[in-house]
Length: 504
Image 1 (cartoon, one colour):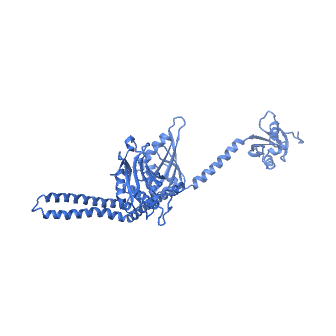
Image 2 (image 1 turned 120 degrees about the horizontal axis):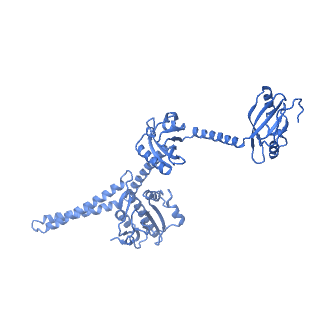
Image 3 (image 1 turned 90 degrees about the vertical axis):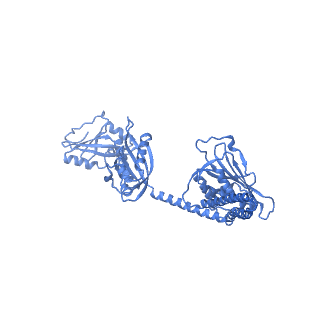
């Protein structure tokens, strides 16, 4: 009850599920319904007054003085578990100078609104500051919207992009084909990525990595929109190209260094056919002088000329091999006969092996395996492995040891997993497990004058062909270095694949 001479026209009902209060002109609570008392108890509040907004006195005064209702006033009610929110409406009764304050629980509504506000603020923060281009597209590729990063990445502001097809903005070689492939993948899988070279609006060439996701219609599953994130990877692509060029330069330098170290072997291989040519030419001259009195000498001259041609061709092949080995350019992979490459390398290293009393023994697979690789780079790897084996064998035996020849075995075979293997086995001192792990690390070497790049580079070359280079202890006490190449598609293993034939 109140003390006013004119009773309030308002009455509260306990059946009302929403909190209701009657307030006097100062904002004090005169009366509250059952729902307001329950809410006060649940929130552990000491007074109904704490349910009201903090500025309730000003609100009541304004409502009475201006003779109007004030709506949608929020109040935060602390609770034991979660905070609750009430939205109050203040209705004045001028005659009694009282105000009816009625609330509704708006907790879910306000929480959702605040989360939406935070999400929107975060979305704007991301889209306006991200260096990647986020864009929306119609199913046919036309731009619906884009983030401001479009100006830096493409040379267009978002307003300029709206309605434009991708083919008009993404100009460049194979763009139309790649966009068509991406649309098909989005239709089938709902997600697609592509790497694309485009021409920027200013004429410069840029590389983009684009990830796209399809938004589908709920019932039909049709693609109704595409969201894409485009990233400029030009710097990364240029860095990779520079690294490839540097690797080519390093490989070429390594070939030059290898050639210098093999100069004696090369001279020996060239001298042998040249000396033979001189011998047969001299003999042919002698027989030719006697041909007038002895016609049978002509047959010997003919035989000598045939042998001269044979050995001249052999010298020519040596020169061709050396020129190919020194060739500088991009990697050229092609199917190659592995046994032939191994034999060429063995001949190239033969003189150095003989000089160090090391015999190179070839065990070549009867099935004549074929792999896809660059023959020049593969020769470089095998020369490096054989020369390492020669040095290790001499180290284990001792340079001054006059004992029998040591051996290095180079084997080709196809294993049970249809992998093609090249194995180089030496009779050196070998390495422990830690040494084997370290031997392929760049700049790791046990040689006083070594750079430690040979085996590291060799492994990189073999991996570039899709294979792998590894090492393990050998039964000879030395090391077994294995180049492992994956099985070719459609290749079937046969029992004869693993048979070996000794070099004749």
